[in-house]
Image 1 (tube, rainbow over the protein chains, first blue to last red):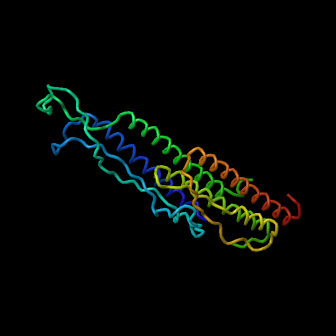
Image 2: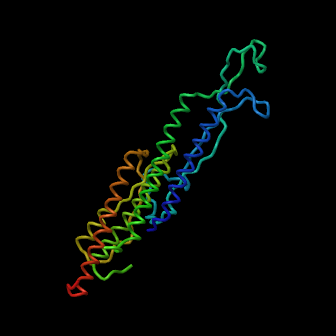
Image 3: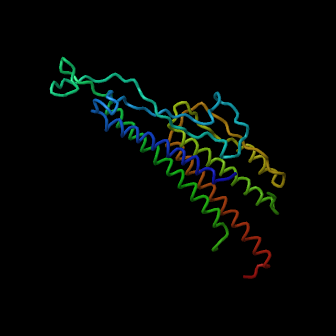
Length: 147
Length: 111
């Protein structure tokens, strides 16, 4: 069993959480973007996380894999959601329609903030796992020395 | 790897399985954000028990990783990982102790 491979798993977890953080930040920052460079309304983004290699059905025996390489790693992909826009009454806005309503991106600040809390917790857990693995390796390397 | 004494062999095997557990818990934590992910677990205790009873017999070749039907709970994974890390360090300590004992025997008890 090679503990060095574990770093790659934790690193994959960290980069997935970073992607979620970036997407949440982008959604919050663009919560009032009525049109982007292409002239269209900003569509909120979402992160889809899946494991690679994909898991099999429950209780499947994973062929006694003793290599860290064989363990599933998370992969993040960004998808554009089709959330309905919020209509805000603002007749002075150049993007307002004839009735004075402006279409704002359907970003829900509450859900996005909750997502950020979850991202932080997951990120910290991955970092802690990384740290514990490093500590165990150091302990192994120093075995029998200085005593 | 083959060690000279059954004790060292047993300790090395147990440490290897602890390392396996560490990587499985790390994978569980890393995949916590994937909705469809179900937590993995290493099952080897019974094998190790049998091995301990008949110390000196060859080490069991495999431990198995099984998939449970439970979603990942971060707190639980962290607790298990901390526990497993302590176990690993205890094993390393026992390994060192055994080595010291052998060195002492080689030196015929002299400092």
